[in-house]
Image 1 (cartoon, rainbow, N blue to C red):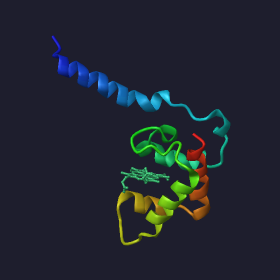
Image 2: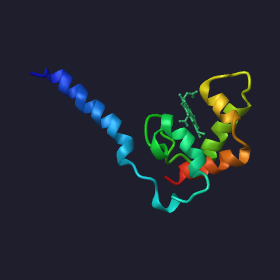
Image 3: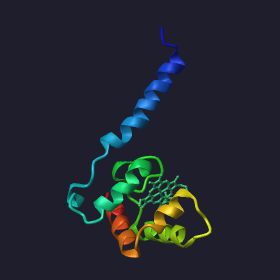
Image 4: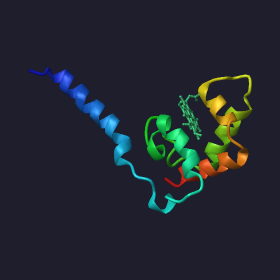
Amino acid sequence: MMKIPDMVAKVLLTAVVALPAVAFANPATLNHPGRTLAANCFQCHGTDGYGMESLAGESAAEIVEEMLEMKWDTANKDIMNVHAQAYTDEEVALIADYFSKQ
Ligand code: HEC
């Protein structure tokens, strides 16, 4: 017999795991030129930016500012700094535009 707290934990875990699966890309952005680039972010920020550390719905300007801040913080080698350094400013703008439209 499953204890109540175990059941609650399983339901919560299922909800968290299923969350990205129920979010769909905005159909208007399926052919967006930033989508393939943004796919590199999905594993940590959720499919199409829906998940923990959500990017979906943030303004493009906000995402660009944060990405460039992390890109030019070259002394810092955390995962996002290294990640941000791999993109040109134009690519960052495309990725940010994509997430802002989800
Ligand atoms: C390997 C996991 C990983 C990948 C891949 C990744 N990120 Fe992140 N990102 C993180 C973590 C963890 C944080 C929060 C920690 C921090 O602020 O350093 C973060 C923070 C951010 C932030 C600032 C916080 C926020 O929620 O606004 C932005 C913007 C961001 N990531 C954008 C991106 C973009 C765009 C990509 C793809 C080009 C990407 N990330 C790929 C792990 C990842």
